[in-house]
Length: 129
Image 1 (cartoon, rainbow, N blue to C red):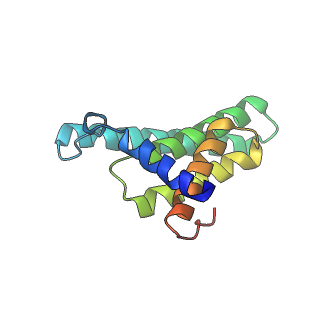
Image 2 (image 1 turned 45 degrees about the horizontal axis):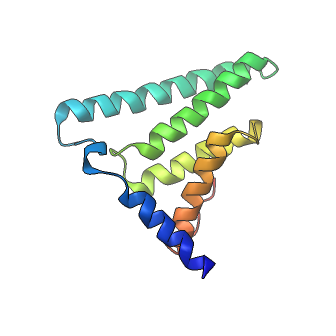
Image 3 (image 1 turned 90 degrees about the horizontal axis):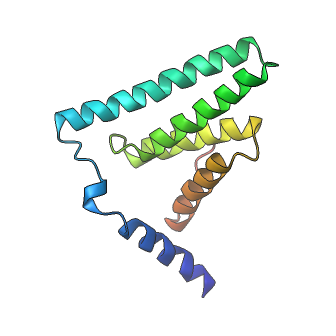
């Protein structure tokens, strides 16, 4: 019986999202704003990764890199502009990248588990990160 509860919980979670919460990506202004959010998150991630790579012992740069990686993963995971087959594997890779440096990162852990659970419930293999 427990194995049937998880899919029902996921359906309940997904059905709680109202249409008003889903941005209309057909609206050029909305699509532009969402693209800008993705672009900004990716640029911040790349900049933080490059800085950390140059000075891996700098704790501030490490934290900035972890935060930027998790943020880019979350923005990617939640973007209505990206297809699920694109956004979920990319977000999973980003969360795994962050968790290598910060295994206790709650946002990365929770979102990674959510993505993995969705794949498992659909009977699909979890993409390698």
